[in-house]
Each structure stands twice: as structure tokens, then as C-alpha cells.
Image 1: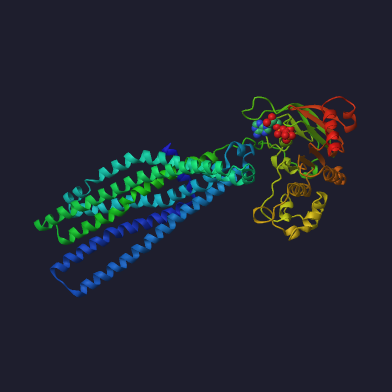
Image 2: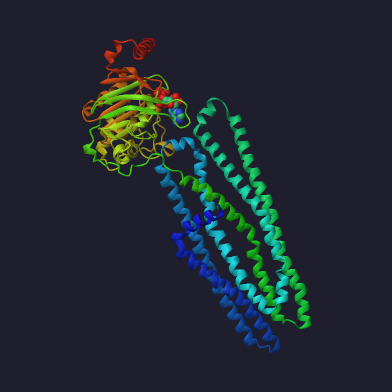
Length: 582
Ligand SMILES: Nc1ncnc2c1ncn2[C@@H]1O[C@H](COP(=O)(O)OP(=O)(O)OP(=O)(O)O)[C@@H](O)[C@H]1O
């Protein structure tokens, strides 16, 4: 496990190896100078003791100043380069996550909580950045600091050096003792952070509902519980860290105390010179900071390790709907728009019964077919199956006699304009929202689609008309306006098939019928699937498929269906009654 994480770390860093290498060389130079400067001080002190001269003192001071400035320069360089590599890794990881999420089927996003996904793509990636930047720099620095300093210290006096560092194994044992706990608490924090993000996200989306049902107090309490859990997890980590860090710092100061105590005795006995003693003190002091930083380094490393697993869980999620290796690519003009289902059956993952069962039908090119039926009959499932937003079995659904699972996904989806139940608008202008599927469309084409979708007159009343911003940064559209804007977006594409999944539910019957009629000139070119509970609009379609419990139970024109007893007749009678009562 740890090896595979190191391997992944290596993979993250591979594209930036040059930068990391130069940063590491800079660290070597810094640590080399950190050893050379105390030795120089030693020599100056020892030579001054014998023969004091102001000139040689000022020369040494100048030389030391210069070397310190050079060391500072290389230290800055190493930090800029290695921290920069961390930022680059952060950038690439975010790109990779987002790119991967775009390849996964929509079902993944209902199975996984969006708050958790956002947290992994932000906070966890941040932890990896700290691992690659700070932890890497700190680890490499510690290795070089000890690797260069210890031989220099041993060269001065073996006994004093060994006694000074005798306490260091204690430090390693302490770190080992704490690391399991630190890792566990870190994992807990990331999970609790995801939980909290999820609550915030859900409450923001459902704010109106919270107010309507006056659930503010309950939501506040629910939020408090999650926030408290995060606080507890953070405090547990902080307590452990606050215990570990001073222990490490204390141990490294003990080594300094040992040196001060035994070193003065060694000077008195003439075993070492005053210069040697000062150099040894400077060396041990130079080790205190990187050693004391070990606690932070370990925490950053473990945070990063936990986050690598969490981020990799996203990037490892295999898209269930993939392009067939021999996928057929067709130019849009070769698509006619005929849809055929042969024993089409689909069961949602974890569901007991199929949502679509043994469907057999053909929708001809240019035909407008309404799909009606009871709630939960499977109409939306069928709408999602056609553009392969669901993982449909091979040999069950065909576009122009091509099995959709053998067609290139791009070819298939370009042939279909789909307006889902929940019309989603981006936080940009009305015009940009409409031209989302055809970014190069001319303004008059955008206006034409808006006219067809019966939204144009209303857009003209908006503050900046087509340039009006919608969504969080702009005006709020009514449900019906959102639906018709989404419809305009679909109409602008030159897709041969138009699927409207209850897409006019917030539009009155009269306007919905008007919209369907306005599609008439395009009907010859487009196949329209109109899923709706609005029967008077559905009645104007060429044909009606009636669904119940995942099956198509009736199929025919409005007139023919009214002549036979069945679900359609009873739905129509209910509809007529409602019209009269209204
Ligand atoms: N993501 C899902 N996971 C599991 N079951 C689902 C999922 N989506 C829908 N279902 C189930 O599949 C069945 C068909 O649902 P579907 O949304 O297709 O019905 P519908 O005819 O469009 O209903 P409505 O008229 O209310 O929109 C229902 O029993 C529903 O509970």
C-alpha cells in the first residue's frame, strides 16, 4: 500500500523531474554551505585566538556575509522550485480529476455525494500539493542536513558527536509511535470535511424547502452535529500533534544541552579548541530546526498519503459507458433519425425489478411520438437510454439500424438533442445558454430557436435582453422560462432527434401545444419524442406510446387509442375532467 502510494507520488512528480532535480541540487548547496560556514567560523576563532588582527577579522566577516547571502539565494531557489512543482502537481491533478469526471456516466453522480467529490478535488488535492511541496522539501532537507553535518561533527570529535546525537533514536521511536494515530485522525478529518461540505451543498440547494417547512432549527442542529464531529476530529489531531512536536523539539534541545555540558569540559581538558566547540554548537543548532520540523513534515506526509488514496478513488472509477473499440463514426448528415427497440430491458443497479421491460417499437424518421403513462412507468428511463446515458445491453436499441452500443458515442449524442425534466442553466447570458450546444451559431439563429421555443418575447423584456445574465450572478427565471430556454438550446442544434422529457411541465397546455405546432416545419427533418403528462399536447402528436410499469402497453394515434379501452382512455378522461373543473 505504502509502496503503491510512493509509486503514485513518483508518477505525479515525473513530469516535473527537472525542476525537482534543480531544487534538490540547490538544497545540496545550501546544506554544503551550512557545514562549511561553521567550519570557517571555527578556523577564524582559532586563528584569532593565536594572533588577533582587525584586518583578518573583517575579511572573515565579509567572506561569511557573502557565503550567507549565497546560501540564502540557493535556499530561496530550492523553495521556489520545489513548492512550484507542488503547485504544478496540484494543477495537473485537478485537470485530471475534472477530465475523468467528464467521462463518467451521470449515474455515478447520483451514487456519489457531490460534496465529497468537491472536497476530494479541492481539499485532498491541496494536501497532495503540501506533500509534494513542503513534505518533500523538508524530507530531502533533513536527509542532506544529517548526511553533511554528521561527518563534519564526527571529524571534530567522535565521542562528543555520538553523545550529542545519542538521544536521536528516541526521537525516531516517538515519531514511529505517533504516526499511526496521526494517519487515522487525518483520515477521519477528510471524511468529516466531506460530510460537512455535503450538508452545506444540500442546504444551499434546498434553502427554499427549508424555509417553507420552517426547518431552520433542525437544519442548524444537523449542521452543528456535523461541524462538531469535524471539530472533534481536528482537535484529536491537534492534541496529538501538540504532544508530538514539543517532544521532538525537546529531544533535539537535550542534545544541545549535552554538548554544552560536555563540550566546555572538553575545552578545559584541551581535547577540542574553542573554535571546534562553537562549530559543534552551530552544527547541532542547525539540526534543531529541520528536526523540530519533522513533526509537521510527517503530518503533511500523512495528510498527503490519505488524500492520494481518496483522489485516486475518483480517477480509478471506470466509466461504465465506453466507446466500443470498433465504434462506428457517422457524419451527422448520414443520420436519418429512426429509433428501434428490440426487447429493450433495463434494470437500475441495486434495483429489484426492471425499469424497462421487453420494449419493442420503432419510431420512424421525422415522426413526432408522445410517450405518456403513469408516474414511475419508465418514461424518463427510456429517454435516458436513447442517448446512452444508461448502460444499455448490446442489441436492444438501434439508431438507423445501428446498435447504439456499437456507434461512436459522439456520433450518437450529436444526433440527439435532449431536454431533461430539470432544465439546467449555466451562470452566463441567455444567449450563451441557448448556444451552448452550437457555440458558433449566429445571433439570428439563436433568436429563431428562442422564437420557436416561445421564449423570445419574454427575453426582450429582460434588462439586457439576450445579454441578460441568469443564475447566481444574474436574474432568476421562472420554471417555465427555464424550460423554454433549455428547449431553445436543444432546437438550435441540428440534431435529427429531439427528446423532450416532461420538458414543458411548467408551461401551460396551450403554450406547450403551440410549441409542438411550431416544431411542425422541422418535423419533416427531426424525429421528436415528447414525454409528457400534458395529454392535450400529446394528442397532437403523430403517434402515442403508452407506458405502464416499464412496459409499452398501448401504441397508436390519439383517435385510435380513444376507441379502445385501456390506460390511455382513462388518462384522457381524467384529463378532460380536470379541464372542465378548471
Ligand atoms: N437512478 C435510479 N436508480 C434506481 N431506480 C430508479 C432510478 N431512476 C428511476 N428509478 C426507478 O425506475 C422506475 C422508472 O422511473 P422513471 O423516472 O423512468 O419513471 P417516469 O415514467 O419518467 O416517471 P415520472 O412520470 O414520474 O417522471 C421508477 O420505479 C423509479 O423509481
